[in-house]
Length: 155
Image (cartoon, rainbow, N blue to C red; front, side, top):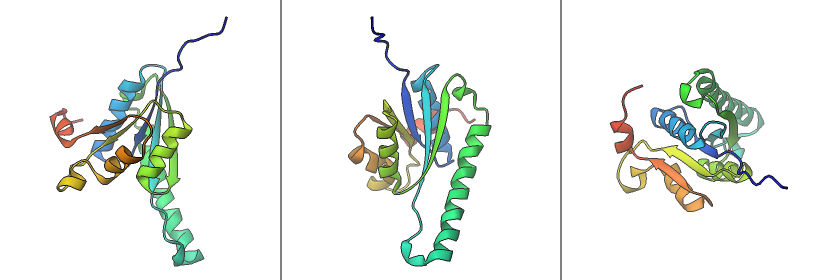
């Protein structure tokens, strides 16, 4: 008889080190449940090709170094919300919304979670990355709005 048990949930999180992103990680961990997977994605715009080799390489190394530091910080933090979950990270160059959506497809994630900083009016009410994900993703996208973030106790 074939085992028909569902695989543990997998949740992809757009992570940039900000307070909204940290709250998105906690939310994703709850959604992934004990035994599930949380995939942290730090996506960055690579430098333009026209910079030329030495400048391009230096800027790319700086972007990658910053992204690796941001991901390492959350991985080393020992956040109790992540306990009992498999935590993976992806450091990927490319437009953030497209990159996060692509990583979610590759990991066959159940959903994508991002925090919103709530800057400005319409386009920035939920953030450009969140707005982009709502148009590009082929799976549910959870956007933690500023009101939700403001209502959470300080951590």
